[in-house]
Amino acid sequence: MAPCPVCKKMLSSISAHLSTVHHVENVEEKKILIQLANQKVSILTSPCPVPGCGYQKTRLDRHLTSCHRDLSDQARERYIQTAQRIKAITLLRELRASSPNVPMATRLDLAAADESSTPDYDQVLESAKSGVLDISRRLGMGQQVEESQQTLFRYVCEAILLKEHQLAESAVLNFKVEHWVSRTPSTSGIFLEHFGISLTPQQEEWLEMYFAHIRSWSVKKSSPDVHDGGIFFLSQKGVPVVNLPNDMKRLWELYPQASGTDLPAVAPLPAVAPASSCQLSSAAGSEEGDDEQPSCSDAVGQATGQPTTMSSLFFTDKCKFRNRPSEARVYHRLRAENWSANCPSAMDVVKSWLPVKDHIKSPDIIRRIQEQSWKGLCLKDFGPPKNKGVIATMPFSKGEVVCDYHGEYVTQDEGNRRMQQLFNEACYVFFFAGRGEKVCIDAQHSPCQCHPHQDTFGRWMNHSRRSPNVKPHVFKLPLTEGTRWHPIFLALTDIQVNEELLWDYGVLSDEGLGGETVGLDWLNT
Image (cartoon, rainbow, N blue to C red; front, top):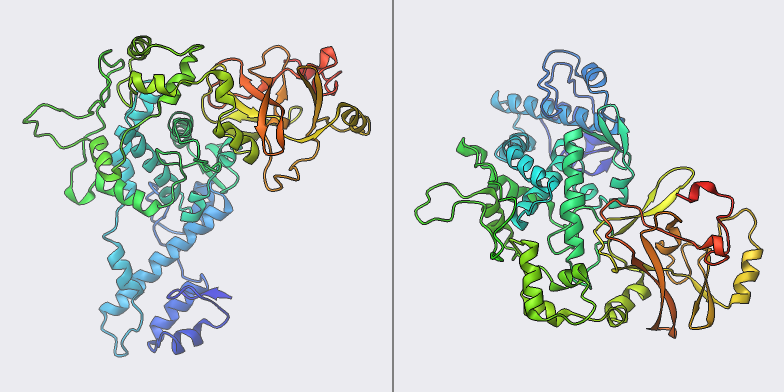
């Protein structure tokens, strides 16, 4: 079975299909198409298709093996197929130029000629490099970066996977955070096992900058009803990207190759914006009569058409006002933050304030408990002895709700009975009391019966007696099963992206998880 190079159907007889379906009568044309379908096109003297290589001598197959050792077998095969397609199209063009007696029936070479007017993304990425380096530098320094520049940064990260590494569009759209956090070091940078590709140190740095400083805040400020599904590339609203070709088109429009001139690099923002400024700062000159070209950030803003907004809930979460604050107090706190963009009004912040207990009983928290749709968390395998744990994929402020401990509610006696039946197993039976009412949650089985297609985070958080950063608190909540006491994990400190979530199991005082960690010294870290 081989795919038809014209219609892509999988067939056992390419020759008969070309004759009967595509009416190919030219013998040379049919020969080239059959060789392309069976991957028999000779590419010994073809130029290397790896971006930036430029090799064009002999034995391309040996060159890909000896000079590009960081390529996986799958990536090497994709480059070979690309070289074969280019060579076949060249042969078809030469055949058409010779004005053969038997007319050619297919238009593969003509379609490729139309494609030649599409962007050269190697040059586009090279043109964008200076602006992206500036954005990366400012992100690393903790400086403000406009949403339009964050979007440009995402476009470039998408292009790295889609164009430089030639991944399928569906593969990039389904790229998940769990794939990124499970990356491993390689001789040339890092290895993404899910895709079978190696990234250079600079490519890793850019994708990590996007993950830690751009994606994390998209998740943080997204609406309560938005769930990212663990997808790596998100829009500014926190929803998964769905139209990669459109993103690539916008990136191409920012760097028009045909003009012969590159757009200027993204102008840096000041390290600290004026305290009185809560307006969106412009990255380009704003004086009247400025004849310079618009900056990349302006162009992205026009292309995306996305307003720059941020929920005032973020500010109340960050500041944690114990009592309802006055507008004057909020105004001074906002000025102290030195925000240059997306600054909420003091009135909006006061309106969005809720006492901690009321906030935990909000419909949003109840929905997350019922659906187990907690934001900003991801499972990660740390290897032995820790094995699986939970990391933050967005920042959490001190006192903020992180997740719950989910499982089957049982009585204390039933919990003790189940725990005694465990032999050489980790114990996920959690005991707690709510105003004297002793309760137990059995999370031994994962996934649970009520959420059979997903893991829950509470049971996977590791123990730390010395440096916990989350702590379970018990609240009486109106759940679907009725009003009952339920454990909610709150952040003990400010938690950063990529930080592991740890809590004290209480094993030294015969509380918590039934003493399962006694004798495991490595847990007391």
